[in-house]
Image 1 (cartoon, one colour):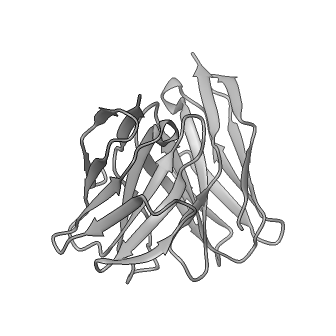
Image 2: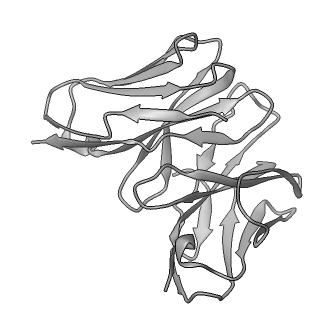
Length: 112
Length: 115
């Protein structure tokens, strides 16, 4: 069974600092890994999707890396803004099925 | 805006009752998945439907059932509600025949409270 862990569970940073969020998974036979953003009580917004053959993906201030051999992914958010305050979820899809295994999330607060 | 809608937004039920939650997927998306997200937890996979057939199920009892319709809408039915069923229920659609993009598009969720 795929276990996904996200560390830290919660963090606060001053505006302008870079954010580093970590995700680890136990089964390296992944098809892809996806990072989502979730605002309180809301649905999930897909931020980045990394295929198993890729090492990283970038979108604007966001960069996600993937190291399958060590079972880790890192989401970097450059120059954080108060609008980045949200919970960030990492989800892994294994080969052969379309279900996602989620971590519990990193709850981020960016202090103005 | 993902193009996936869910109804209702919020729902309050009492223990033992039955509930139906609805999801409307993006046009052309042939796969819909349902997830349960308890407070402070990550979403847990309930089941998936592909071309109107169940295509995988998570660790949920049979009182959780679903349907997918040809018009890309789907339903999640829960019988004999329990207090622990209180959660945010999310549906997600994807176009399975395009694995190169294969992004799961999530709806805004339905918040179910069981009293």
